[in-house]
Image 1 (cartoon, rainbow, N blue to C red):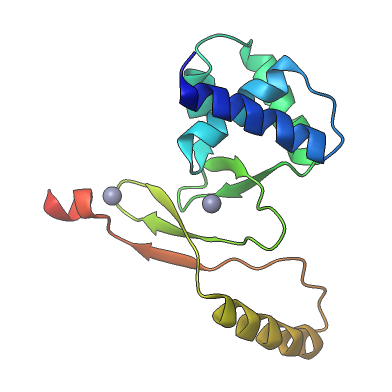
Image 2 (cartoon, rainbow, N blue to C red; image 1 turned 135 degrees about the vertical axis):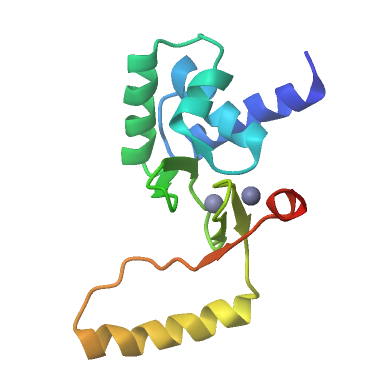
Length: 150
Ligand SMILES: [Zn+2]
Ligand SMILES: [Zn+2]
């Protein structure tokens, strides 16, 4: 077995153990695919990468299950495509860059002091609009290098 693959299995197992969630093959499979990719994936990509190890209907069920367990997050691209990614752990927090031409999605992080300033701003917004804020996301829209070079 390759070293990388071994590490992913160990990490998938750790994610489930840390969250007191029973280790099952389908859960390990989906987490492993997301860990390997190191970025968001479309559901259809996850299905493709699973190489038939799981029936498509089971795949949707497992993805929903992991979402309900807060182990993965779902968000939508500009074209309203659903994307799946591993949930942030503890203090980690990231945002997304979207390419408006090809739809590629990238993760990025901002400096922690900017995040703290943003949180302060959100407290003001909360009271101004009388709304309960659960989370925030910052989206950058643009053209990736591949599309620019075309
Ligand atoms: Zn692009
Ligand atoms: Zn992301």
